[in-house]
Length: 104
Image (tube, rainbow, N blue to C red):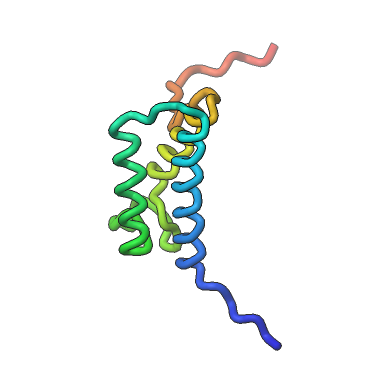
């Protein structure tokens, strides 16, 4: 009996919905109040993933088989870290160009 291959888009959709629900549940369980923007973000992304299977339309903002864009994934990780009481991972970290010290 051969196993039917899983649909990658459906798997990504399920994973994204689970991550959104886990973030909301973690915030409620820890008692950390989410800002209005964060609550609206979780709700709107969940609605778009449920309706369309992904939460972004521009293919330049994320991989073809993913349900969340790169920046949406970063914001979701930040919200989850806030709910768990950990320091925010920092999102996109940018460093200036500098001269490297010579090896002495």
